[in-house]
Length: 189
Image 1 (tube, rainbow, N blue to C red):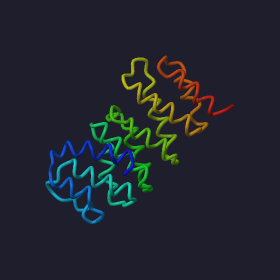
Image 2: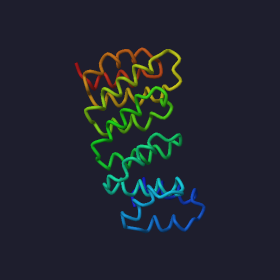
Image 3: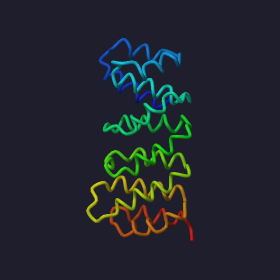
Image 4: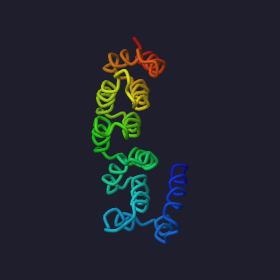
């Protein structure tokens, strides 16, 4: 098992409270068994998350909708696990979904993992979504500066010249200045 799966399984083992279904979902190699958990009524959230993560990291696109819902969850650990699985899933809908979540002004508090996922995907939607999100977060007393910082760092990693104006504006913000300067340097002249 890789590091992400170990962290996820330990968290969900505790959350499951020793439920026998947990052991079955960890042990199974049958994707059909996992897929049923995603849509069966009455399944606990931990079981759906475990099934979606395992299917997503195996490249089974039936996990896509569940993973996008988890990417938008208020629990940041669930968001992180979903982002990891979505990055491995390689579904062409992922970037569009992550961009919609990152740019949704009503869900800014939960945008960190969609922003990071967009950076990892390096999709055509990535830079425009990060630029849009960062522009909105450059007000003087913005409480979501960590999301803004992730946008600044992501735009530097993407190296898209369209980001120059917003990164220049971000360089004037004390919490973002160093990262914005570094990102601008990555864009080159």
